[in-house]
Length: 177
Image (tube, rainbow, N blue to C red; front, side, top):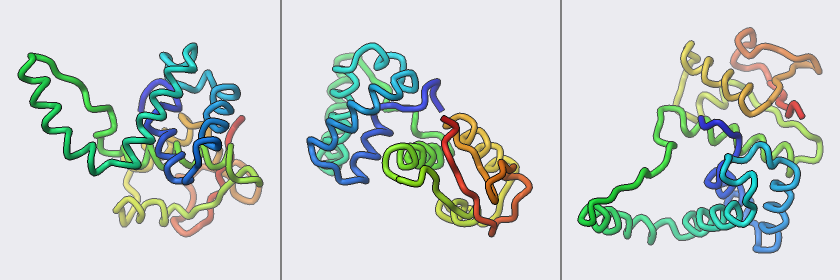
């Protein structure tokens, strides 16, 4: 996980999943920038133009991913011939999908769901990412994500610890702020 909550790619995934039109996208990006500027990556906190351009780039990429992916090897080869390289991005770690899940969840709770929370079973979350049972390592990562993305797990209106819950109990997740 990076040092900020939102990066351009994560927001682009959310926009793509919501099938937003251009005006909706612009209004959403404006709202994110106004309400949660401190949660953006450092380069975007004082540069709204760059923030919008980078998110737009990734939205375009997600819309036409097949074409972009076909061209990637040629671009990489050209850069190598010039003695240059570039970092793809930091989403290739073991739990990147789970990180994206929690980013998307935070965005949904804050900007889409009118009730301000969502519910999920721990078993459903684990199964979705290919896990059949909880291990200490995966639970530690989920706990880090909950803290990092400022999501409170509650049960019956009281803050709870996911370590103490059974896999089939419903967890209600809310944002801290």
